[in-house]
Length: 197
Image (cartoon, rainbow, N blue to C red; front, top):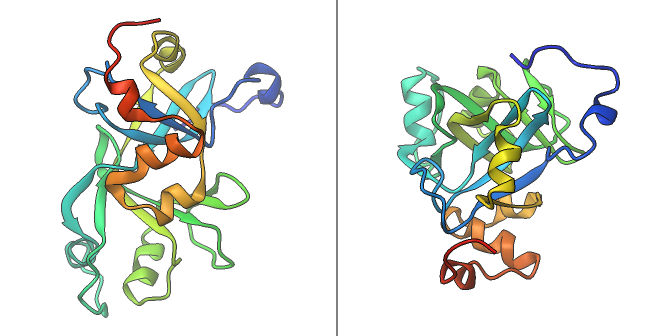
């Protein structure tokens, strides 16, 4: 649960990183996040939540449909399920471009992106009727109040505006580099720099 929502949330959190990418800097030692790129869907005074978008599990969409006993799907979807983070790894999250279709539990994140956690979107995907641009993840990344801000101040993360094209059009293994390059940053050059500035 996200807890209470203040009416003046924008005043309380003017520098919200919602709808931003977090790219792990070369010194990141936490194995859950080393060399990762995370899409933040929530950031407030109560903490932050997001999905790691460049860690594929050895699990296909077809296997998820089968495990959930979703019938009537045509096998052959090679798309990989992502490891969204170390929190609640038993829980599924579907990040997708907005469509006219409605789902039982959808959180609009921006003009282009939504997050759905209800089974009906997976059932539609299995029938070939779901969103075309979609990422499925198990688990999420979470930070307590002030934790992410401290990590950013310690140069653990590079923050950049999120781009739907990076989420949905770039291969999993290239997402961090592609996001950084879009903003003129070469991660390979950062990798050779040790210490802090």
